[in-house]
Image (cartoon, rainbow, N blue to C red):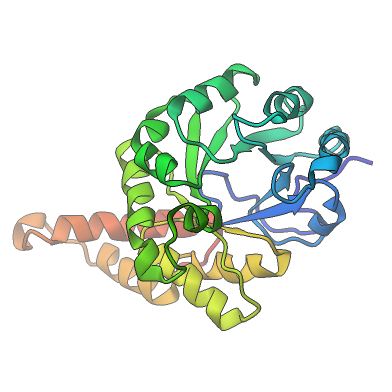
Length: 280
């Protein structure tokens, strides 16, 4: 039986383009049954942190088997690891491969090297997880094969010693947002919120969006719907956008803030339409 694209199985919702995907769920290649009820915009088969060293080969086999009849993203081990080439060789030929998330990226050369081992045009999400990676974020974003940047906040904190306080991580998040925008990439993807509290998850996702990030990693399928809601245009924003567009006048009659505000309003309405969010 042919499987639906991962993250959409059993649903009738539209498939959100990866450039706009809000929720990115990481699922161990050894637990792919967990994707059947996922509401995530994109689900990533994980060959890296979610798989213990002795099980790496088995995980690759499971990913290839899934991709033979379905489609999805795959997080591969980092370019300095012993598993990097084997991961790419295993999944690269799969017709169902939507793209690759490369772990622990620290240079544009690592993206270029990964692209060279994959079919032409394969999309690569660069996962920035260290101080070196953050310092190289702009050059990584400018590399032709880079599709989006993502923030591996847990490993970044371990590498730098910063806390999980939003203020402590604001600089890193801002660097990824600016690097993405300057390179003409879709918005960056934030790290996961490790919490059992729906309120805390929603607050974290809203903070990500406030910082300019447009996606968020998650380790749990039941987090996806809350992330999607929090990272979509809110009803109040859309009401403002609709009012501004409907009342658009000759710019000569407005002050200097009018045209940027109108552009923002139109952008919000276009995003809502692409995400299937109703604009009243």
